Length: 76
Image 1 (tube, one colour):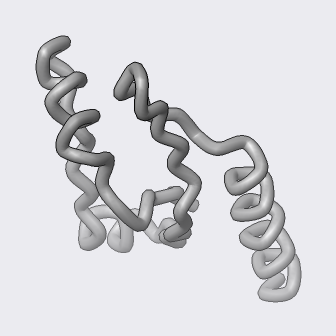
Image 2: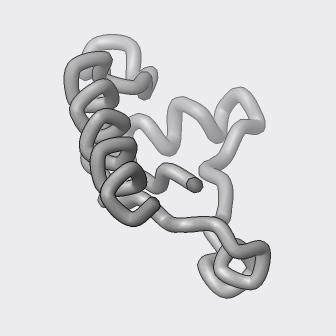
């Protein structure tokens, strides 16, 4: 499976990363689907308003992974 954020970071965070020559990864759903991977969309982003850094929110990430795993088990 491929985990994809449901929203982009704020313009402030994007600018902060751009200053370090770092940019969001383009998600090509067609390519991922062709690889036979399931797409899991979840809002697991945690954005630090002071530093502009973006990280995974641990509780939201855990919830998304457990939900995906539970569904995958039911599908066999």
